[in-house]
Image 1: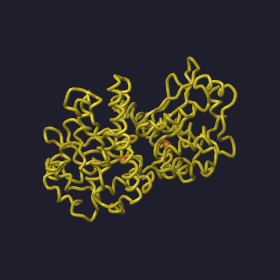
Image 2: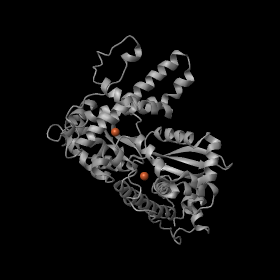
Image 3: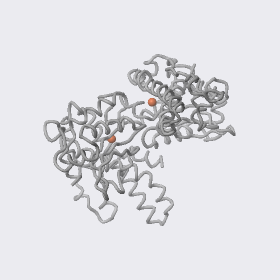
Image 4: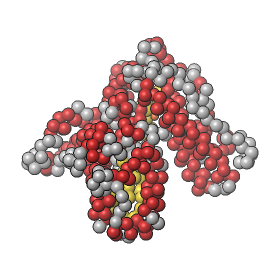
Length: 236
Length: 230
Ligand SMILES: [Fe+2]
Ligand SMILES: [Fe+2]
């Protein structure tokens, strides 16, 4: 089970190390938590034909793994920089932590908010409360899907589109650039990776087709749990 | 904003056909048509950069990606002109990000194609003359420059470009990065650009982007870079 609490504190607070130790600051004593690549909740070919096995394998075993590896390295270097009183290196590492920590969080959320098309989880009926809230906000589920898809296609460069629940329980569509994660009071309900690596081997420059097909593999059950705050992922 | 972008997608096929028309023939009475951007021809065949960049990548990159920027740029210019005509400057300003993105995409790719060349022709090797001297003065050696460029490329978070640029005032060289399709403007003259978007290498190199950054030195057109320097 992925525990994001520490990374999120790290990203949200500008004095990240205190969030880790909870004790008086002593860099030499501090054990840095190692993050690991979470297993996918389905096989690499389980999302075919909407997302190919080749994409899933590279995306999970190479891209996500690189974010995890680079996050762990940056956290170690950051601790060393704190120990050495080297503020410039700390700031440099914070950028690397933000990018790779964000990459780790985003992909961990993404895998869980997808499911094989033929499963019960991908039916909107698995998200009764969420769909009711979506219909209240956008008029209908289709209107929401159109708005979400347009937002995804409007992203310039690498980034993510998210359905989030804000602190007043309202739903909004937001985008984050590169690997910026959703932080603060917004709760990510589901996210879609719009980096080219997420679709290029299968869809090439035809990202509109990827966006159209992603709806077949959205895990509405997970989305409902995040919306209602009943899954561990909503600790985010 | 996003809906404007969407509208350009169905127009793509038509635009591809339209781009076969030479700009001079398309000259018409309105200032908008006169200023229309068109997809430039590649100065070499799609397969000419193999094995360093595959034919398939080159074809998609030029015919689809670059064409989309050209189409998007023309749409943005057209919509800005329409808004201007109506005196709706708020609307015109709201289109600015699309103008920057697609205009930058058109400019960047046009520069990129020209600063590449087949390894069997001008591509690869090392710069000569004043440019060689300037690189040695500002980076220590060509090898140091190459390493610094590769480190910079590897450090780009997300989509973007790395550029060797010349400062207009001091003539000194430096390496800069630009996010997404932001063009190099202002104090800098772009000399050499390398596309670090995933579409530039993914079909051939997948996640191994360092291999792409190593390979591209075999097809850099130093003649073009030197011309831009002088
Ligand atoms: Fe990704
Ligand atoms: Fe490109």
